[in-house]
Length: 229
Image 1 (cartoon, helix red, strand yellow):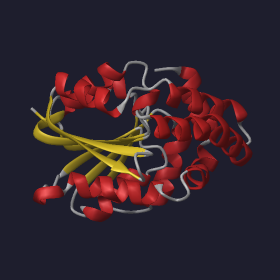
Image 2 (cartoon, one colour):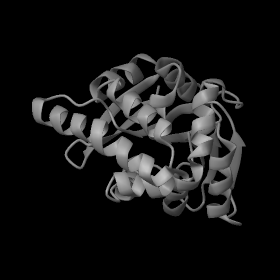
Image 3 (tube, one colour):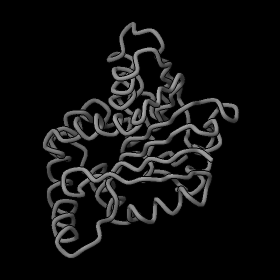
């Protein structure tokens, strides 16, 4: 766990949702809904779901809305983020919260039917170790859904992505959060991240099969879904 990153996310927790909505032009909401639809495709109905890097709970609550009978556990390493998620969830039954590092999850092997992670895996100290840990806590046949910004391929996507990441994100993010350092970090982490195809290969090498990719908003974001072997 990187303590500096943990502290950074704690600092921006109060403005995190507003920044996400503004920076994505409110597209982060339909992206999550589409990702949940991928999770439940083919009638898949998980009974126990882990929301990793849960932040303020947007992804986990979207899963709960689609699968009201499921038990959803939200895990994040930033207490201020989880506090906001708890406030959003209110008194809903079947929603739990735990402060945890994705690389050292406090759960037994094969504890969950599904796992979701929205815009979190690029913040891990080790991407491969994180994928392995997600696979460890999933039952065979369970699904993992990762929604993320991946490094673009192709000339036009690269140009548009570079302009947005280097100019728009740090300026607008800093204006909303009043934390320039945080959004400088976020743009740097986005620029150095893997491509979606590289991530797909990583999942296939570390416990997953039938890995599929769905692009959102012309490839601005992607959902990657894998089935635990």
